[in-house]
Image (tube, rainbow, N blue to C red):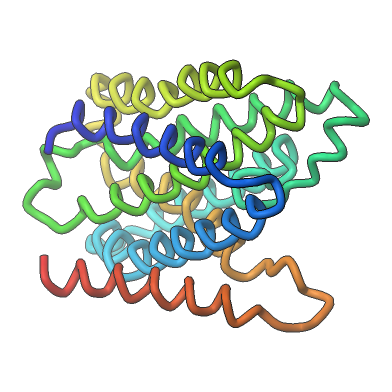
Length: 243
């Protein structure tokens, strides 16, 4: 597939996540979101470790690691704005009490969505490798992102149609990021560094999903979550093994 087809898929997957949230009742949404996050987070984490990191560290440049760290800590900064909404920390009552938090939330989510487009830079350059599997990980993450956005819009009192309209507009951010970055020659010439920066950001998102359990006070992770994690890692390994 080409970059335009992946851009379209990003929009479709994000809207599909919102559609799942629309279909479910309020009481079932949080549990389903955790399942989707666990599966997509595990898949993304496995792809990063098994495929993307080996690819970007092939040249053994220490500067590559610096860009990984930069992406990682930038995502921590984004968490300050979003309060972890993009990886399932839905403290939605905070937005009911203080609407001033809404602008930083969507600003942070917008930057996060833009960063999701970074790995798509240089698609033609990397087509000979299996690097396309990282795109699958990002697409699965878009399902959780769309699901989460619908829940946020719902708590803000938006109607179903209003919510889907705003989510549809938001879904354009990652494709716009892809196309803009794809057209910048400088980024194409520094492809490994761009991928390292994106990998750092995605690494933070995936490990936060996996290892910040909603039941930390029990010093464990629910079996249900472990099953979804195992499925995500298994799918990633299977795709890499047979591609």
